Amino acid sequence: MIASLRGTVLRAGPSEVVLEVGGVGMIVMCTPQTALGLRTGQVATLQTSLVVREESLTLYGFDDVEQREIFEAVQTVSGIGPRIALAMLATLTPEQIRRAIAHEDIAALTKVSGIGRKGAERLALELRDRLAPPVAADGSSTVGATGWQETVREGLESLGWSRREAEAAVAVVAPEAGDDPDVAALLRSALRSLDRR
Image (tube, rainbow, N blue to C red; front, side, top):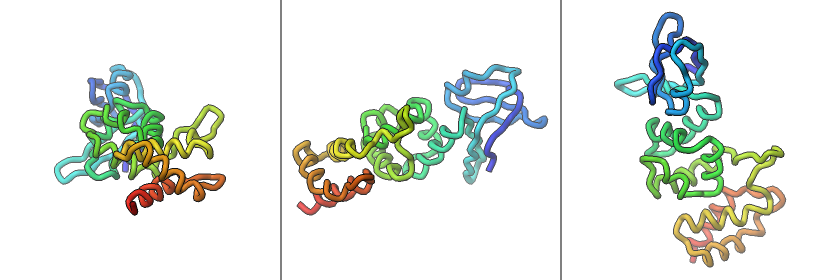
């Protein structure tokens, strides 16, 4: 895998840049924010991810490692390819993506072109355990020991359960929470409790 490239910018367009690396011009697909932040002639370093398909090898470039990690993580969800993953980073910051997934914020995720409600629900459910929640200024997770109830309730509501049903399910799983609640596990337990009804 090509993890990063450093070279002279030969061309920067709205969705791609050409970096000259060792005499070779490499086309790198980027978000508009990354591409438009580069100027012809400047030396730039991009964190990269190489996507291999039967008919092509495509490099995607990012300002930092966190963007690349999110780009790669969201592609593990079925139905999400590199085009939609890049669109997510063009629409939302990495912190906003982490927060949307941690809090099952379907409305935020469906702002991304190509992601509908079902896709957003799948992203939130499948990435909950893989993407760390956003970190507060003091270094703590923004999903704390006392905030898990609201997160689980909002997650259930976003999946179509009523507020009353969601609150009842939260009450059922509350004894499992302990001092360091695993929100994803609690959400799964709450879903199981609702399915048994």
